Image (tube, rainbow, N blue to C red; front, side):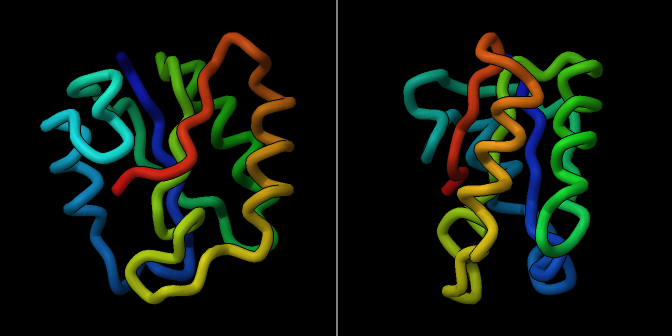
Length: 109
């Protein structure tokens, strides 16, 4: 499966995404059901309140993503313990924009 990962812009300078790349390759964490996946893109939400996540998710789909994954920095607040306050709205807007055929995965690790 090909996935596109959207991460938090605010945690970009404290997390290089190493764990996201590792667990996707190993099929662990949120990918235990799918097994190892291929990352077609790794982008940020564009900053609060996450409006840029919509065109970025569309771009990832155009580049082959079969699922859009919200990294755990957005949905769970890893590594700083502060989940995105805009997450639910961002997730719902992205899901609406990309349609029902593209899976949404709500976390990575």
